[in-house]
Length: 273
Image (cartoon, one colour):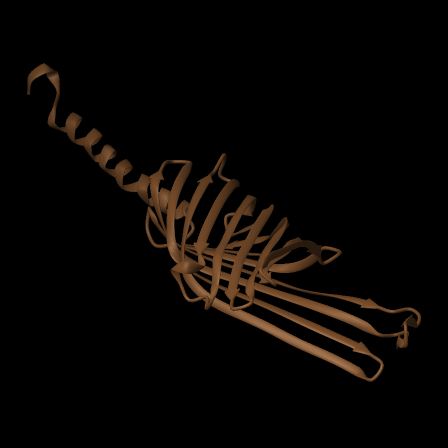
């Protein structure tokens, strides 16, 4: 052969190159988890605004009142990622908030000829659940970072209970509404090293896209986590979650709106399979 090369000189590098090309993708695939489950808790600070408007005696009347539920509440937080391929993922999220607030009268309260006895109380309870399942496609999929666009379905439930007792008089009322709708989202994930992961995610839902009865509005969510892997299969994460529920219901008597926000730090463990 020309230039002093033998057939064995060419065959050996070719075999080595083929072996490396076959091995490297296999090693990369082993480093990408097929399924990741994150179990944790969120220390929720909830605050909101109740607003309304109506027409009375030909005049427009409106009100807006801020409220909160006092102390923070520790609630469960669950999410999972199922990797279908290099660019394809299914992502599941679940969040539940359930808190009550009670005010009790320490002594008798009299007004004209009406007396409300000591021990009378009023209790309010709010429950909010949110679950989503989205398909995530990585429009950018680099060696250490990826950017994904998400589309899927989200289910939400809001339940409120008001209970009061004054002597022999008792009152209890419960209102509940749930529905589902398509949700859109955006995700950014980066791995600064083999043990560290940073994940940012945002999602948006419009109640008009789905089945939420007479309610109009939106649900917005954003979260960020930083994860550290002690082993390839086990790790821990910390982060921050933020939710906003902004809905209105119109009736024959006027308009009633609720702007409810949930926010707080999250922490938990990660399991990879």
